[in-house]
Length: 113
Length: 113
Image 1 (cartoon, each protein chain N blue to C red):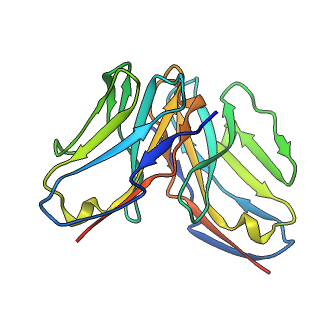
Image 2: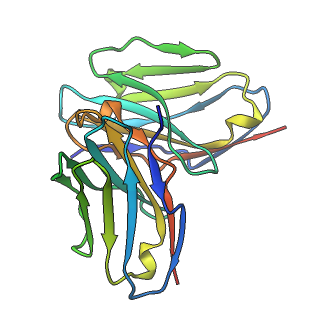
């Protein structure tokens, strides 16, 4: 069975601080996909990134960066110089491609001005 | 291109009633998946429809059902509503059914009183 664990339930940071959201996953599949979604108060899930199991390169997109490590089954997400607009619930998710997304419980990030 | 739309956005029902939620996928997308989000259980997969056929089903009671029409629009129905059915119901569409190309709608927030 697949499982995603986001141990941090809530994180609060002051604006401009860096913050890392942790994600640990479990799967027996050799091919799988990892995702991060952002859910603002409006409720819609906003896609941030997808990474497949064969690509362990870290990725940077503006203030966002992702660290994928198969050795530790982790796919962590870092926001650099956080802003108030980053306040949201962030979900890590896993799929084998043809299977439904399995989500973690989410991490609520509050960025205080 | 218009995104995934869900109607209604908000709904209040009484225990014992039934409810129908609608999801219109992105034009050309043939797969629609439904997810339930509650504070306690998080985001859980309900079912997926592809070309009018249910392709995957999550672990929900038979009170939860769905269907997909020839234009790919999908409806989900919950009969004999319970207080625990209060949730945000999200649908996601994809072109060929691969989760790595899923796009989520804004959700329908259902409150059962």
